[in-house]
Image 1 (cartoon, protein in one colour):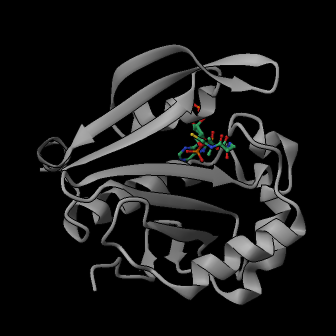
Image 2 (image 1 turned 120 degrees about the vertical axis):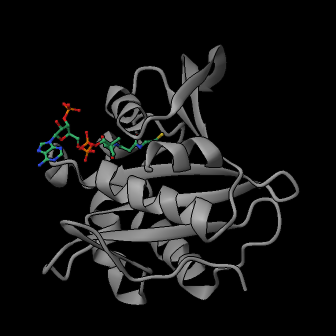
Length: 187
Ligand SMILES: CC(C)(COP(=O)(O)OP(=O)(O)OC[C@H]1O[C@@H](n2cnc3c(N)ncnc32)[C@H](O)[C@@H]1OP(=O)(O)O)[C@@H](O)C(=O)NCCC(=O)NCCS
């Protein structure tokens, strides 16, 4: 089956699969309003985190539109999940892959999201055969914009008031990079 080779070590992180023991760590960030602020949904309850974790640990199919993989981000040497990078197969035929990331705010500002996303993006191209990797983010989500730009992704779209975040009209950027561009940027 096509999937990611995990665990992977980067300079400062261990990237691995989620396990059933990660519920407390997952809820510690997915339960926070600050983390959900630009995700167009409320923070997750502990029960919702348990359901999410069950899906993440049950299977890693990567064949059909909508299939998803999640990578747990752990500081090297710490038995603790401090965030995640997610991949979604947005188009199986056209090999379009959406990437996303979230960190526990206690671990922001260290470059962990960029480091984990860079490694996961590389694996999406090298192992999952992605042709194009893209991210969608609220234009107000400046931390996430900076992650995209540090990764060298191109801002391809600015969709104006294309979604509702409660009462607020939300606008969205789409950032993307192609497999050949990713490869060229790293050789
Ligand atoms: C988006 C999100 C992951 C960004 O987190 P972040 O900590 O800003 O991003 P990184 O972990 O890559 O850290 C980068 C910052 O660390 C700084 N940094 C400090 N020490 C560093 C080091 N040793 N190496 C690299 N960067 C370092 C960088 O300068 C950068 O700061 P800047 O953006 O002010 O220039 C985080 O805000 C989050 O989880 N938000 C909620 C969920 C969300 O909105 N997800 C995105 C949905 S599209």
